[in-house]
Length: 262
Image 1 (cartoon, rainbow, N blue to C red):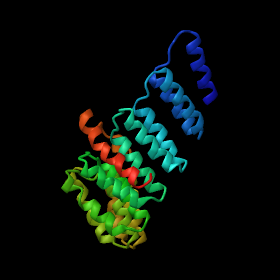
Image 2: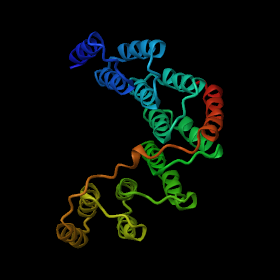
Image 3: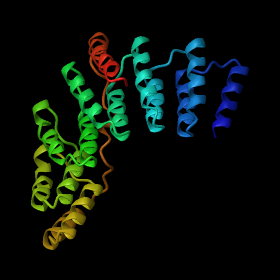
Image 4: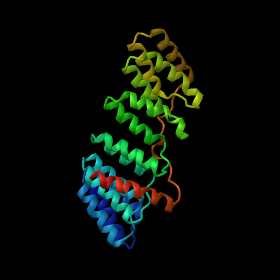
């Protein structure tokens, strides 16, 4: 597939059709999905020299691929390079950084980075919090995850169905079935509707903990609601603030990464 894409771009150029940044981003994404990061970076450098100018999607795609391949220092260095070129990071960039650090075993660094982002006035969305909550739970820091979940309202955020599902699952694993059930019932207070995945976690958790009657009730409720929803897609979020204020905020994050040799 990648070679076919290369042929298409070559044909475009031969016919006098200049590929734009979207075309090159598609090509870079293809390389990254094929785990051909070196080829993706070679194309990135070529585009950077000749044009068009890479955009935030270009940088996010490459940085995510670096983390997925375990190249943490390279990803963080690439982030600093992005700032140096005046590219404005967005909430997806924040999520990629946090997710990458969590999944490569650098949870402490992820927590410190999260706090640095907050201290610098960056508006993190529910996806950023969910990433940390998952990371904390997987590392066995359930109490800290609960604290972070409970602080959402303080930061003006409401849990989405994904975040609720994470916490419900955690409660069941900790054999806190009543707390899981109460949390499930409180979703409506925040205007959040359970999806198939949430119902599945809830019903299985109740059955595993011998809450057969409640499981039957939830199953009937699910059937009655004809749940066809897709899990929430808040991960992509929205572009942060104005250009100048965001770049100032990310200067603090740049310093953080340097101090921690990331």
